[in-house]
Length: 246
Ligand code: PTJ
Picture 1 (tube, rainbow, N blue to C red):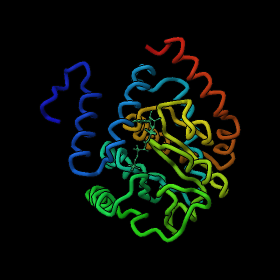
Picture 2 (cartoon, helix red, strand yellow; picture 1 turned 135 degrees about the vertical axis):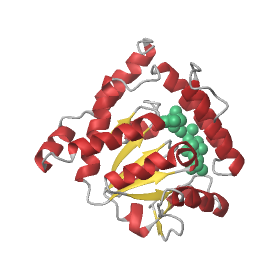
Picture 3 (cartoon, helix red, strand yellow; picture 1 turned 30 degrees about the vertical axis):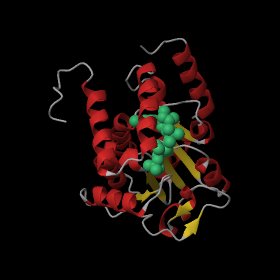
Picture 4 (tube, rainbow, N blue to C red; picture 1 turned 180 degrees about the vertical axis):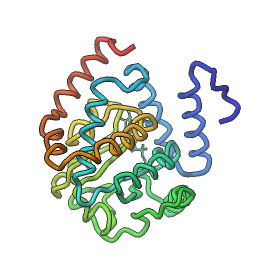
């Protein structure tokens, strides 16, 4: 990362690319994770590479939902580990919430590497020996930890493909998604979707949680009641289509 000067106009995206490349070389990131990052970069560019007004509302609602949760779980995969394991660890302390690894391209080696990354930040993660299953889900994401997603009432999923959100919702859980694509299945199915770069919104979510901690349960419930996920996603899509963000 040192070889990219901070003054470079594309410092943020180039340094993230480096984290992704290094994560792939170490074996943390799956091959498809490289493609997923490219998808994300495109949407990030179209969204103006900044946290806009609508996104701030999404972060506010997500913070309220995490604070109200009885058993919140932050679900991590290869990309999110390589990009921001430290920031996710800080978020987990601020809520507080468990961290659980959940992989689409699951191998024992990747699980171990991800466990090791989080241990560098003092975190013991769940999901390394899952004993429960998400009913109906076909992919390897179905394996979940009894003390994690199984018992959770709120699950934060990030950079997610496929249909886990839908199945977790069928199990009665509330889902917060972080996905730069407002049209993805996960974004559309989640209760709250944050259409922002994971590296940018995780620290903002932590800050928001610290601020909202002083609020009463009633005030937090009010934030969620007034939040309309589909409406904000529609607006975000329109802004992208009209090229309004850049
Ligand atoms: O680590 P694994 O085995 O669990 O595999 C994970 C990947 C990422 C390979 C898998 O979940 C996948 O293929 O995901 P998709 O279908 O590419 O979806 C990822 C979504 O995250 C896309 O909608 C991207 O636009 C979005 N995205 C990519 N990078 C970021 C992002 N959203 C937020 N922040 C990012 N940095």
